[in-house]
Image (cartoon, rainbow, N blue to C red; front, top):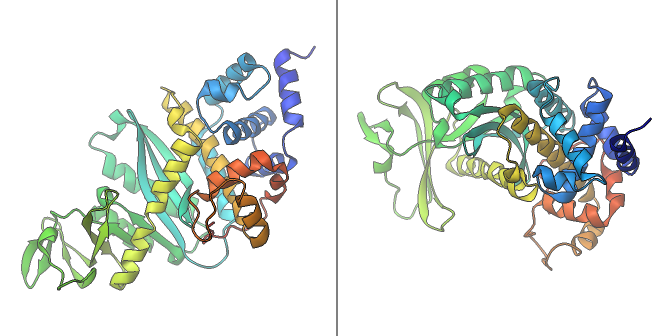
Amino acid sequence: MRTRESIDFAMNHSSLPTRLVEYINALLPDAHGHQIKATIDFVMAIINVQSCSQAAIARFFDSTEAALKRLSRFLHNERLEIEALALAHARLLLAQLPFVGPLRLSIDWTIEDTQYLLVASLAVGRRAIPLFWRAYSECELKDRRSALERDFIRYLVQDVLASIDPKRLILTADRAFADVELFDLLDSLGISFIIRSKDNVKVMIDGKWEKLKRLRMRGNQRRRRWGRLWYCETDPRRVFLVQSRARNREGKWEMWHLISNRPLSAWTASSEYARRFSCEEGFRDSKRMLGFADARINDIQAWQRMFTLVAIALLVLTVVGCQLIKESQLTHQLLRCVRSRRRTRSELSMVRAIAELMKKQTSLWELLSFSHKLNLEANL
């Protein structure tokens, strides 16, 4: 006899878009059938309810109580290996990348209370989508954070991105990652990087060690290239230094001290580093738009499984968005339904616009396919 839960599941699953079923099957080819079905259901629910609150997700289904139990079992299922899920997501994303052109990666942390998530994000237009991630509790990071970051990046490049030519990769990171041992690692891996440095680090100028904050621009310069010099008095390394003025979120001017292992022009280094903020916007899409900030899960492994569902949802919306913007006239007509009348830049991110459109235009699911290549410059 079929239980009420299995009946509810059958009713919901039968109405799921065929393209989403095919996509998740391609994502998790070796997973158990029930695990695949649960992933399909909960990704669909997150896209629709735009919240990672377990109660909100459960209300998407006919039987809230049955769905809540099923979601809890999924999140705490130890047979769903965290690393394997993240790798499966990364492999499908890599299969959808163009064969040529630069791949811009940003490394950063996102934090909820005492739970930390280290994420490598891939820039797609003005947004970034998670490529690979690992979660840590606060106690795990004590006196080990830099070492864990290096282990993460080593595994990312040598294993996750093993099929990608390192020359295509451009890695950016904020001041917290400005560590000379990390510079050495990236050099040994053949990865180009632009990392912002703290302003109290010393560099050698004209034979003297000076703090970065004491270096001055010439006149009204916005950017200055200092060339290759010695960085960090206590453990010197030869790096390329660029300074750039930029406005922060409060609209005030601040100075970027950018460190690189490539002789980039001041304009190129500044422009590449500015793309790093796409990962901040990607975190905003994850935490606010899809509601990952609503997840109140104490178990670090279950919390990471919830993020996996969010990452898959972001990838699904991005794939659909990249396909939709190929038809510029159709895109403009559809976007009029969800955004203000603007001729140029949209006030909505691509994933938010697509999420809202897919509620109104279910035919957009037909644009989802694991065989499509992503447009890494896609913007609304």
